[in-house]
Image (cartoon, rainbow, N blue to C red):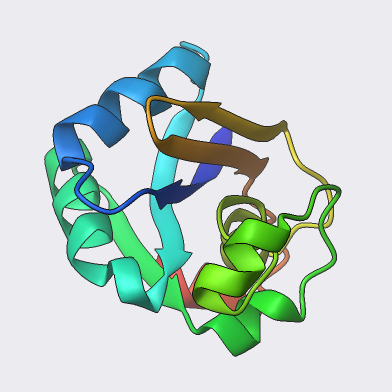
Length: 128
C-alpha cells in the first residue's frame, strides 16, 4: 500500500526523532510516498523526507484549516492557525477522506497516515 505520512512536531524536535516515531506506526507492506506538514515546518519536512528517500510537501495553515479531521486541538489552533496539522496534511496530500492511522503522538511528534488516493487528484500530482 502506498501511503502519505502527515507530521507535526514541537519546536526543537530533530528529524531523526520524527523518523523514529514514523517507524513505530508503519506496516512492513506500506511504501511511504511523501511526508506532509505545515509550511512553517518546511525544513523539518525536507530533512525527514530526505532521510526517508521520499518527497516532502507543505501547506499553509489556511489550507490545513479547510480539511475536516476527526481530532482537533485548540492548543495547535492557537499556535499555528489550524486545529490539525498531521491529520489535515496527510489527508490533503493523500487526497483522501479517511485516515489509515489516526493522529498518534510520541516524544513531541505527531503522525497520521493515509493511503494515497490514486484517482489523479491534485495531491497525487503535487507529490509524485
